[in-house]
Image (cartoon, rainbow, N blue to C red; front, top):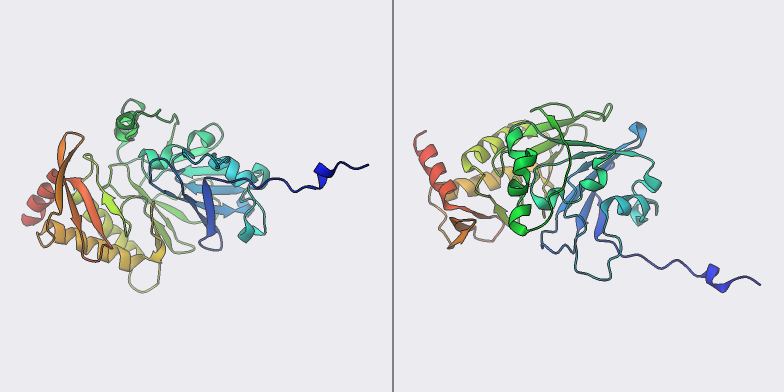
Length: 310
C-alpha cells in the first residue's frame, strides 16, 4: 500500500523576497517585509552563457518579524524557490551558476546579505574612497553600529571609475563612481540593455537620505556625469536601490537634480528640523511628493556656499 503522504504536495514556502522580470536578462528582487522598513531592491542579471549571476546589492539579509516567512536567505531563495515567470524554476536552480556581487555602497540595507556569498564569490565595491569602507570604519559607516547589529564581514575587490566589471565575459557592465549619497556610492551602466543602476543616489516617492558623510556638491557632479552618460537621443532606464525600477533615466535624473537645486537655491522651504547622529537635520518635500530629502543641514549650507561662488 502506498503512503498517502507521498501524494501530498510539498507545503508552499513563504520567502522574504519577491522576484519580477525587469529586462530579458535581469530580475528585480524586492525584500518586502524587513524589520528596518527599508524594502530594498536587489537586481540579478542572469548570464547563463558565462555561468554567472551578477547581484547588485544584497538587501537586509532577510531580517523580518513575519513568523510565516521561512526563507530568509537571499541565496536560498535564488537557488530553491520556483519563480512562475522563470518557467517555474529558481533563478539559479541548485546553485549551478556562480555569483559576482556588486555593492552600490556600504549601508546596512544593501550589505546585510553579503556574507551568504563572501566565501565563494567576488564582491565588488568602489575604489573611490577605500578608507571609508575599510574594516575599522565599516561598522560606523554602514550604520550597523548605530543600529546595534553585527557588521557583515567581507573582503571586496575595489573597482575603478569607468572600469568594466570583471568576470562577466562579453556583457558590457561599467562601474561608475558616483559619490554624494556616500563617498563609496557606485553605479553600474549596462550598455547592452541601456539600464543604469544607481543605488541610493536618487529615487522617487521616498526620502532621498544623506548621512553626515554625504555631500550635495559631489551629488550634483555625479548626477551631471550620469546625464552625460545616458545622453539625449537613445532611451535608457534607471533602477535605484528603493522604489524606482525601470523608469526613464533622463527624466528621473533631470527632475531629481532640479529638485536638489531648488533646495540649494532656496526655492524649496524646510518642512522640519530635527537632530540625528548629533547634527541638526532638515526635511524637504516637493509638491506632489515625487522627490523629498532628509539630510544634515550642514550639507545644504555647504552646497549653497559652493554654488553661490560659481
